[in-house]
Image (tube, rainbow, N blue to C red; front, side, top):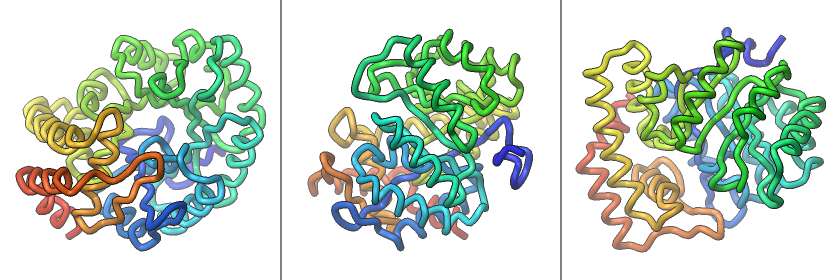
Length: 317
């Protein structure tokens, strides 16, 4: 039986699945209490699952030891209340497979895999690599299309060729290419159990209206109920609510994410906001660093203007 059916019939995987921030108290040290508060906060907001150790979780900047410590503690706190996905991307296949086994042991439900991000790869080699991994992975997996970070995308022909793998259950696409994304959605007609999830949260409503199964939205770390409400409105076709909530989301994106220095401003913005909200430490993993005092003050003012402090209080009551 697929691990996704442990709690309820969850294939295709759907809804709002925040890519959980990794709270850090110091270099290579977890803010455990902050992690607990953050998880309880997002669960109270009605999210449908959690993605651990993704881009927003700064996984490539964390030691393998810390990744294991974080994954174990997070799964203990979540305690099977929602489906849990874990990123297993690494440049070494053996590290990917070892971590996948560890993820199984600590209670993860599914795996997320981006392309190896050092050597550029031909699509035929990429397909072969995924097929070899699929034979040994102990859990269902999604591909993570993130060409801006990995230098290679999962071409649509490659994704189609891999559909015969029964443990390949979806794609998270962060390319921002909606033409490509629409082609992914068409694949769900061949595989009704196959999930297509959008990465860029500004495209969440558009994606769900097109037929996407949901989104892996970083802003849902901060105001999960906003993203859940937008997903629900798009799913039911309530365009008036979609327009209202989309405007809120775009204001949040503009006022919080653009204060930081591109291209990682969204991450420094969301971590700063989480710290100002009293949820967890805002420390980033090197080579990223906290924003200076004047920018933190801008974030705080923007949070007040957006009513985020009130939204956080109401979602936790």
